[in-house]
Amino acid sequence: MNAYLVGADVLGNIPELLSSYGIKVHKHVSGRNAAHQRKPASLKGADLLILFTDFLSHNVMRAYRELAHEENIRFVACRRSVCALSQSLDKIECAKRCDTCPNRKTH
Image 1 (cartoon, helix red, strand yellow):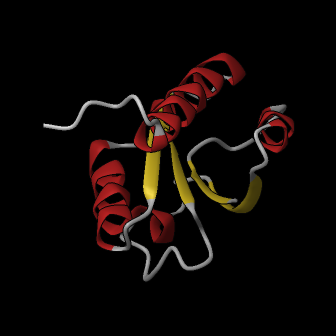
Image 2 (tube, one colour):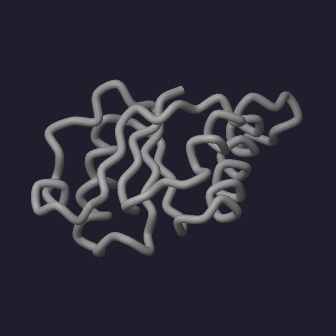
């Protein structure tokens, strides 16, 4: 799985955490550059969008979320810390498992 990361100047231990979940960093943009603050043309090649909320404005987050929705790409929004990202990824994994669970109740 490939992830498109938006926010944060330095990723620190985040690539290591992502690799433990089987996720590679496809692309990382800091969000500070004016070009990064506009809606990108595409998230091509990414399976997951990760937004680091403590480094982005609301408009930037909205633009990337809308694009992820248009391209049917799952996204996560969290603070730029290993703990926050790990919790968010655990929630996604739980939701993924629930989608295929034979005990899931359908209405």
